[in-house]
Image 1 (tube, rainbow, N blue to C red):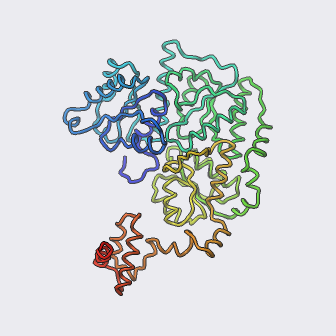
Image 2 (image 1 turned 30 degrees about the horizontal axis):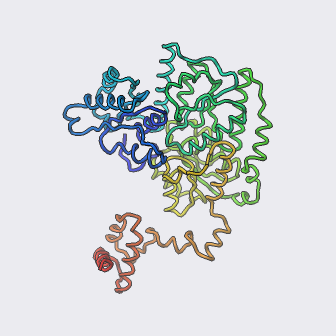
Image 3 (image 1 turned 135 degrees about the horizontal axis):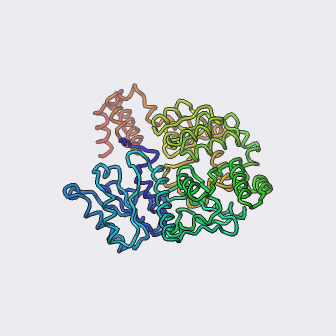
Length: 509
């Protein structure tokens, strides 16, 4: 655990809450102090634009709890929500902060179970050792295994395979990067392949439907971050094969479909998807044609850097290098736990592999590399703005503009078109540079001089410059210009702290 003002992956309880809120009629109780409940109001409701309240209740750790203990309060909150909401499952999770109290939450769950109709489980996550993504993967496994074991013990487990080939899609969760759009594209892909969707887990299904998981012929894991543990468990305990090749980009989609074909053939269903792949590549996806066009050839020789989660960073690196002939100087991920797999995927497609969750290191690397474009997270977008380098956002963490209302998948054949547009539009091309120089614009050299880094050291004394850097960025330039204007009008050769205060008073009067 460490103190940070930016994290690529959030704390563990966020991952647990993302899984719980993805199921239908599952309620989460978060044992946490005030301030840790930002998932409810900020993340879930605002970012995902959900019309319903997030099914999460904060059992607040306050001074009374610290004095008397949490047992009574936590149990009361669980039983109250059981009566009010009538959920199928209640998931109790502490946060990093409340975990410090070292309370026996498992005992609280056992006590509450006597007075509740819902199933109640304690999230089996070490909040000091895992992050949001690892916790979401483990919580999904915990819920799936809990209900499969429950169905097995009550002889309700459905193990008879469907008549036609079928699949479980595992890992599309709340607040995932373009997950809802990707899911629609995956459903279209499996429809084209004549494969039924058995379950999409956990996307809006009831936990009571999980007993139908073994009916599918195989499982599909579209993202590295969530679903891998569940797929491995189902392979080991139920002998269910799985495909975890990310269908992002023309080449990866083809590889993924061939892997699905091999599984179906092994299971006794003779299929050949070669003509489908050829037709989709040549006539449905425009990116294959575009990569050979003169427009895309204008990108030859351009330099790019890539950073994000393991799934998206690896896929985008391969697309840039293999499909669009763009030089990837370095590619990196903040998923340190998946470093070995990531290196294997990208080492042949870039000059350097970066494994780090330190955004300052990433910023320094970008500044040192000085690429033509960045493909990264919201943080790399901010870094790019400071360095005047365009950035295409390709991975979480992101802000609200990357939860688009329009249809923008990254997976499947339509996803290839979206990605091709994103990549092409992220570069500033030669003609655009030329026109900006002639007619002016936000990327011209004049506008660069308005940034803080361009302040003349001859005009501003160190003390005043230090004070200026403390001013919030959204008003800093305005204050800088007003102060310099005041100094010019009063024939002042240097700007001191006193000058700043005088300029402030002059503007207020």
